[in-house]
Image 1 (cartoon, rainbow, N blue to C red):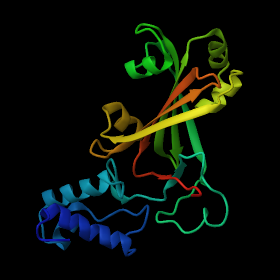
Image 2 (image 1 turned 120 degrees about the horizontal axis):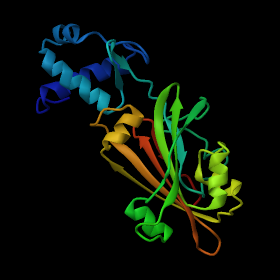
Image 3 (image 1 turned 120 degrees about the vertical axis):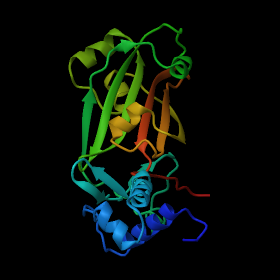
Image 4 (image 1 turned 180 degrees about the vertical axis):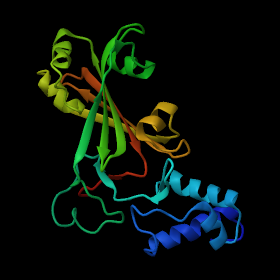
Length: 246
């Protein structure tokens, strides 16, 4: 914390330090804005700006009509490399402890056939007006939305049959295998970006928080693209891990 920082950033540092020291624990309600303004000898407006910073970084979350609470920051691991090493060193100490043992709830969102985004159409080798079948899912951990998944496949009778049966796996590889397709290669691209309105609404996050946008493309052995999966993640809920022998 330095004097060069804006005042609301200095107040956010103090609240962050209090959380790190255990004064406020995960799930606990922070004092009200008036109480924090009095404690830190500042204005309510400055406190509001400080709390918004904490919300944007995922350290706090607002509950309508109830107040601001400390967010549980236990991270979910995302292993992005097929070369991830196994063994004692690969499972050793981590900078950011992660865990994937908490139960995940998957909600399927109704979707319909329609033209895909231009980048997806290009990857799938489709004409601009050609339709695809999209499947949407929302993943929640402890009732907190953590990622949105949309899968794009060419519209075929077999895909329609699976969808009409109401049993659609929530990830691309499982869906392709259920359709009798055999993916041989995966390419994944990930970048950070501000959320669109639908992203913020689906993840229930403030519009100022960065999200992780990942596109995963599945290829057959002959190089044909079988499907595309877009995953939009709350950046405060995930850490990407790459571990391999050299």
